[in-house]
Image (cartoon, rainbow, N blue to C red; front, side, top):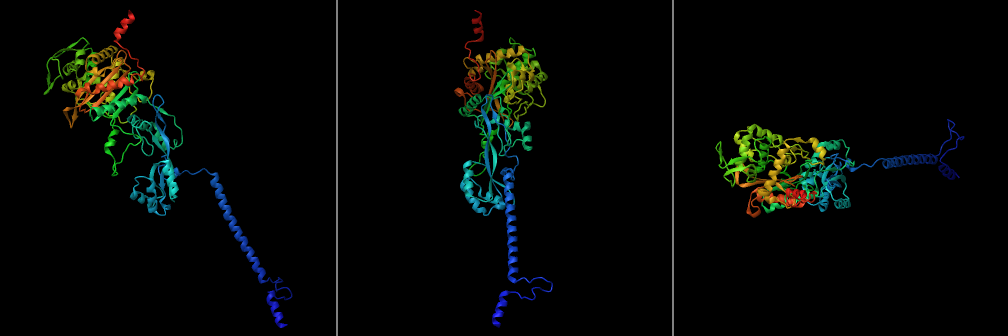
Length: 586
């Protein structure tokens, strides 16, 4: 019995003592207390888990409702994805546009194994610099570019690798469908889509760079920019000058076509040139190909040359405009001129008095010098300044070269400049001045943007009398029919012009066996609409073995006009204008 009572008490876990303790409260058994604590702990755990899940759910909801964060906002240049306007030719043909690309970056803080990342990326990215990439991946920074402008296939292959700490950033890459065709006009951009040369740089200078800096062009569609050039004509001009450089074994060549009534540049090519889609080229050893980058140099607007006998056009126009000579005037070219220790001779001179058309036809240095002497030193300098040949050309194209001239003009300077030695100008401004000789006497600033005749006339400056311009049209036509311009003649299009063969200046001295040749032409001569100027630098040979402008630069003009004249809407006219007029009269 005693043992039974003890067992019962141990199982009851409480002692009944009048049912109440000293405070009048019921004793709580040990099991009940433990159950109550367990329930409290479970309730606390439920509350904690509920709070965590509510927090996670709230964050997910926040992310779902918020705008997506583009990888473009992570480090790097904040304006790399800025848009640029399409560039088109005068007919709406595309010259430059933006392509959507991606670039590869890394957050080195999240890279687990830099060696593994480098090895796997090298399988996808050609020519990956292992050392440089490894250094970037071990950098303490939060952002490192690994490779700019990947192809979609490369992006997909890298994504398949599943590398932590590696990401992609959307960018835009400039694409030039025509490649090198108009490279010196259109120019190119850098990897951040910022204009570096040509009209691309001009656009940035006109405020596009400021818009980019303000973040206003990231996704904006900008209106396309039309240029004055005709892509069809541009392609022909480039092909002709490239072929001439090869055929005549020259260092360089170039040409430009100008509308004499509006000043619009319809085509401009200079070779060697380059592909703006890949403005730089890396050699096998990792160095930059400097010879390839020489193609950046635009010899039509960014370089100055002594233009040789093409300057005789301006000298005779000066004499005619000043009233010192007429087309019927005769100058003595029977003997050389000795001046200041120099002797001025004619190349294959006639050694007799020459009329003004003969001075132009035979390209007489002696006759031209005589005309310059009639006008005088001050008048000569003022006339060339009026034609814009001694000052920097005003146009949209960046990087235009500044002409050079003697610090002090003396008589010997005036004499040599009269036939194209002693003053160096750009071929483009030579073409602009020549346009003023044949368009009625108006100097019109050149433009690479479309311009109407009315807009051009508002900008034009009269620099010659109308009668002087008519006389120069006669001289150009005369030389095209009877003189050195015959090799540029195209049946039906009445080409006139003037050759220029100059000894090239090397190390400050004239080289007798190396020429810089040019030809400035206008067509059709009964009513000129276009100026075409060609240059060729240091040709070793030419047509029939000659190295002068008549054998090199003039045939280039012929090849260009034969192909571009129909595209420009010039109708061929056979026979002389005088003959056609007589037929109409009868």
